[in-house]
Image (tube, rainbow, N blue to C red; front, side, top):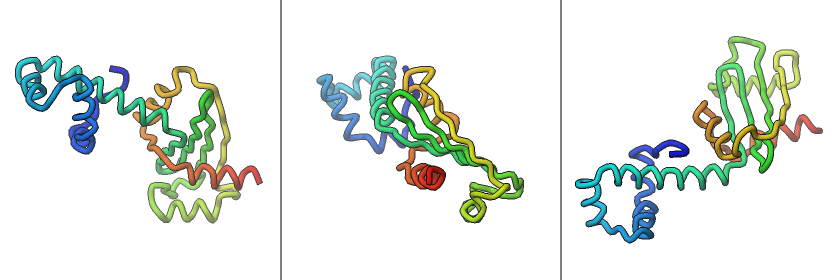
Length: 157
């Protein structure tokens, strides 16, 4: 398995896609029920293959990630060959970017001595989707890129 197995909730949400996946292998509901009962290891393999297919699709289409912690915001733009980052750090320890007030504080203090801004970019050290998956397992979430683009636009201006 390349990534990780989807959760029960994720499988439930993707029920129709999983049914289609099994159908492409000529496995209907009756046969699937039989496989689960009599060949659980085969059923496990099918769940893993399907999970990897879903992850591969999600990661291939991922272009922006965000990771918020109390005093840091990491914004990533995942391009084909490299990843660019914007890291915002509050130098005021009481500020919490996980709260709405913290984000408002950031808006008011972005270009003061209370906020450090670091820009970076590097080529992927491993396959692109694996690198993105690693960021997700470390707490990053998929994003529409709005915050990255907004802050990048301000910095570049």
